[in-house]
Image (cartoon, rainbow, N blue to C red; front, side):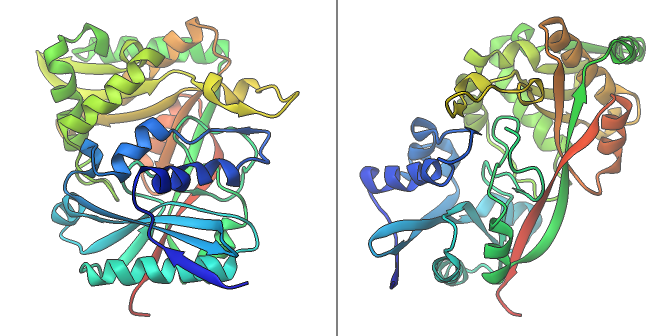
Length: 358
C-alpha cells in the first residue's frame, strides 16, 4: 500500500499526532497516556518549550491510516550551547510492520533538518525526550520515561540510524539496612555544612530561578543537555506541584549559597492506563528523580545526602521501591552514587544518531 508523508497543522491534526501515541501503546497492560493539554501548546508554538526552537511534525500514512510520526526540531539553544549544528527527532512512534513508512518518514524529516542547516540528527534525547529502552519493555517505567516497543530498534536501524549513547535506569528496593544508610548519608551531608531545604520551603520568588540556574550550571557539560529557561521551569513546577513535587524536591545551601538541586516527582502511577485485571507491582509505583550539584560542591557527599533525604521521605510514606532514574553509561560519579544508595540497574536505554553523510 502506498505511503504518503504529511506535515500536520492546526489543533485537530496536531491532536491526532499526539494521540497516535495511545494507539501504539493500546495493547500494553500498563502504559502512560499522551498528555494533550501539555503537548499541544508546544506543537502550536504557544508554550515556552517552543521558544528558540523551530518544530516541524511529520506523519506517515498508509492507505490513509496514520502509521508513524516524528517531530523534527532545530533547537537553537542546544546548537549555541554545544556549537554543533545538530537536529533532533522527537516523539517518534510507529505501528509494527512499518519499515517502509518509517524510512520514508525519517528521510523527509532529515531532509527538512538538512535544509535548516543541520548536519546530523539525534533521536532519543532532546526537548522533553527520553531514550529508547532496549530490554525491559513491559514494566511501567517512572513518569516521563519512554516505554517503546521492542521493534523500534530495528525500525531505527533500517532508517539509517546508529547507536550514539547508552544509558541505564536504576531502581532500589527499600530495606531496613538502606534506611540506616540513607540516614547516615543525610547526617554526613549536614555535618559537611549543607542545609537541605524542601523546595516548598524556599521563598516562592526564588523557587524557579534557583531550580533553573542550578540545573543549568550542574548540567552544562552533561552530554546532550539543552539549557532550560525560567519560563519552562515555571510550566513544569506548576504542572507537577499538585503531584507533590515541591514537597519532595530540594535545594541545598552552604553558607547561604545554593549548591545543589534535586528534582523528585512522587509516584504518579495513578495516571497510568491499565488493562482490566492489571495491578501495578510495587516496583512500578516509583518516583522520578533528577539531581544536579555545582562543581564546587562535588565530591562532598551532597548528591548522596539529597537523594537520601528524598528516599527517607518516600519510605516514610510507605514506598517499597524508589527510583534513581536514568543515568549515562559513562557518568560514573552518578552511577557510583546510585550504587552507594543501594540501587541496581533495572533497564538499559539507547540514543541514536543519523549521519547525513555516510
